[in-house]
Length: 598
Image (cartoon, rainbow, N blue to C red; front, side, top):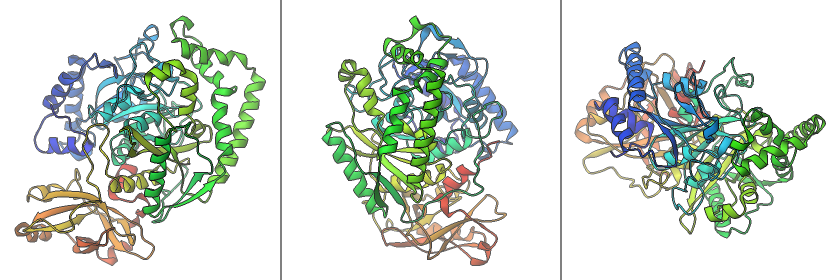
């Protein structure tokens, strides 16, 4: 089958009358157990059991697909995360055991309608950033198999990059949810610690571990995180967002840039990052260099100090002879440190973390290369520890300093390999990073993963509607996959692109509207808002407009490129009782961010 690539693709397929039994059966039949990205795939019986559960969920929802935002969507999880009735191996056959229950995040996603299709390969016990430390095989880079895929969440990144599933779960302790995203040209969302429960996760470093999300688009990653996240009393490291309102970014955000950047002689990686910085500046981002020293010093603590002992504790009940040699050597180092060393390491972490957070105050994010370089699998075999440490140059400090991060595709290097950037911000700035990430993806013209498919982008799209059509900007319930999108598709409207308004709009959630709808209004202190452009036949435009209820209407809307199109506007009186949601940057991000989690 031709695999659908995004959440919206799957939802549209089901709205068009296709059934999960057919689509998921075809998908599972097309997957190859010999593909080393997988450790286990759903059996026919496991798939059928999940489909029965899905039927029960749909019946409970009264047949309303909008109440099951992930209805029939296949996903994969890293094989250090539990799923009831599935083996958890952590890429160590001798450790394998059948999980008695779902990890909390898996349970939440299944409750939203998602269907687990397989568990993925990883650097054994999530120790490594390379994707080569597994007895189940080295997961190759999805662009060039001679190169590493990145790890430890290698399989989870690979199956998304190749379009086998629209999203997957990984984990991130030192960069494992970001490095493989950068090496495979996908989005890697590393949430604030404690947002996504780690109940049911085999720990690597329990105080630092995060469950992460891989997807082809930022919008999909944010949606999945919102559904998977939420306070879990069973997880002692779970916590609630202390902010009563989302943290946002303005039209001209301020990003910090390291004053010195190391690429280990990789001129192509340096050139790709410089190009990314130029693109950020063109988007209106203000870039300012800061002292990177405390970030570098904190990153070094993770493997060159007592913190490695936390990995030793995590595996203290595992037979050392079962552990892969490089991983065994790393974990054994933890025995060299005393309890006094551990306290000194914590004091040093706290000191450097305070310096880092003080440096980031006044900035919307820090922007860094996701990885300073990439290596072939042959090179990695020669220098497994040194090259692994290079990959963590811009990732290792993040969890130690209690920061959130979003890895984004940025460009393809001259040799055709992906190069990514990562945005890093203080804890609970996740929604602000996702809102900007969606702006970023709306402006760059890159294939999604390794599939060759592209998101509709701003550059190069025609300004005029197709002959006999009206070009219409939609901002809320008429977006692809949203409840009123059928009012467009049933009138043979055609999606042209996702793009942005000019930087003088604000977005509001209207009170009491069913289904929920936003209001868009011009404002001097506005920001660009994500919209979709549709061409609707002129002969059907009038009947479409007739269905629009007050306080909404159709007027003229200005896009980021200066062109004016017809679009949804809102009467001012309705905004007085509406919630200002401009910080989300778009309706889809707001809907994802306010999905009930508890």
